[in-house]
Length: 306
Image (cartoon, rainbow, N blue to C red; front, side, top):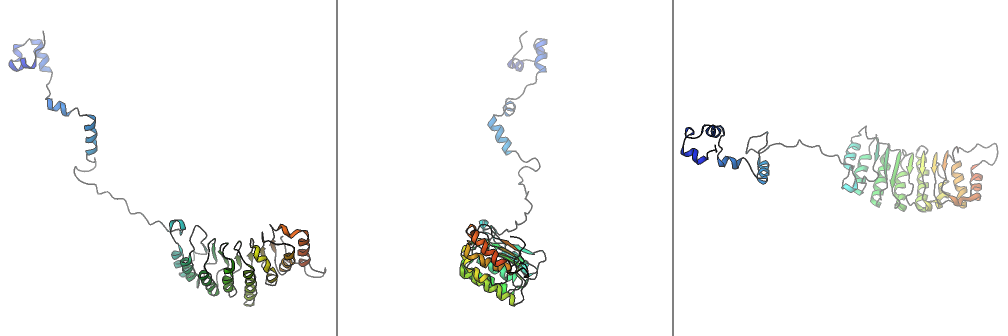
């Protein structure tokens, strides 16, 4: 028997139909057209519905109040390429005699511009804890050199000093004027600082002057890679000798050899002359003649490493 249509059902009752057909129609539920349409959205409608769906953990229509926890301030490192300066913080520690700040390292990429020099010198002037200032690799102005020299006249704690870059040149003389009145520095690094003859002579005067004030012997003096300064070796040889003297790549030749020998004889225990090929055999002979005693009864030189 053919299944009756919906129109037929509307006109008659199931009893008027064939029993099997009527039973089949009654067992199949009918669904309104609008329900069917809403149950089968297009992909675009489905995506729009997903985007507009409210968050699962909040009521519909209510904005989320979630906020990130406060982040700690990133400490300043004083790096020039970030436009930062750490000098103010270090200066506060120096003024407070912070026992944890024993050595102050401001080599690049940290900044050491004129304002930084002022801050650090203000902090170091009366500090009694920090014993090392390492700020090599930065150009220094005349005013910065004068301020550093003024600090050296007052500070009684610094033992190691490393300042300036290859452009320092004659300006080093301003620093040496302060060194002449300082009695605590025992390690001075002026390697590759473009020192001139005049700067070398002022260094010799400073070493002589500080000895008269009771300063201890210089432990380490780094003069390597200052070729012009070698012309001041005659004056330097008359100054108190450091225990360790570095004159690598210093442009030494035969005429400088005797001066180096005399300076070494005055108290140098560790002498580094590497990178001076122009000394030659005659230079070595002149150096040894000035270093070694003229007679076997004289005291041997203090030199232990060459």
